[in-house]
Image 1 (cartoon, rainbow, N blue to C red):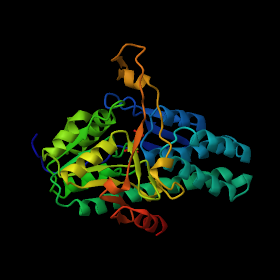
Image 2: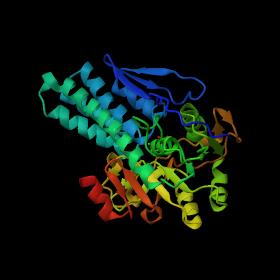
Image 3: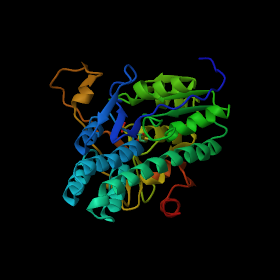
Image 4: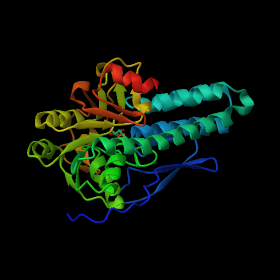
Amino acid sequence: MTATEPRRTEPVVALRFEAGTLWALDQTLLPFQELELRLRSAGEVAEAIRRLAIRGAPLIGVAAGYGVALELARDPTPGTLERACRLLVDARPTAVNLSASVTRVRAAALEVGTEGIAAAALAEARAIHSDEQDASAAIATHGAELLAAAGAVLTHCNTGALAAPGRGTALAVVAELWERRRLRQVLATESRPLLQGSRLTTYELSRLGIPHRLIVDSAAAGLIAGGSVDAVIVGCDRVAANGDVANKVGTYGLALAAEAAGIPFVVAGPTSTIDLACPTGAEIEIEQRDPEEVRRALGQPLTLPDTSCLNPAFDVTPAALVTALVTERGSARPVGAESISRLKRI
Ligand code: MRU
């Protein structure tokens, strides 16, 4: 790996709303094919979220907001509003951004009469999109200040522009560190079973010209213990009121390894990912996905067809293991009920 001149390329655009249509890069096809899906109803958006064509906590929130607006453009009635909201909220359970965004668009739509309901929903969906874009930029700055001394970082899953508007969350911090010329290398985990690290994070890091190496998930603890990493930085799908963090399965193990090695374990995400209604991580619903995802990799069978598998998509890292939570409003450090509530209520 050779370090090159930091170069700033435009981040990939995962989602755009144009002329009454939501266009979404189909992330199941990356990095081999860059193909946009044309989505025209809440049902199509919900399906794209369910099969992870659109994924990442902030991005599914933004997409769901547009999903409600698309449905109201077809039928601007309160009944349709309720049906669309339910359909979208049910698409995936763990990331709070999904229900938070739908709740926000629903409230905006209910404030106006039938005549303006579709326009009000679309305006709110656009506002959420723009808020998340601004949040990404602020997270990058705060995170880079916090990790200013880090030369080598390890990240998990995909948290870049494919996962959140703008430059993403944890990967936005990584990109900012690279631009500040301190960062030398990024270790990216594969993130089995769906390989968001292999397929998506390396794709984004390559586009940005950031030196990186892909590792299998099981190599992470040893590399952290051996001193190859100065800090671990990941995203989040839901942060409970006490600071416990739900994120891609495998995150908890990385936090334990970081704690044992005495290096920072930093979580980055917008305040829209904080759920004060969820007291602790124990109350966060963990999505259980199809065991077939474990039995296969990129569609190819890895096991006998009847192999019994467990496939939790996320795990919960206790607040005590999180060095800092970086948001667009600054950082919670230490992470706990008081610092989390302060950030959420600013
Ligand atoms: O199942 P995914 O790919 O949607 O999981 C995504 C993650 O776990 C990310 O780390 C999280 O959503 C933060 S994205 C900025």
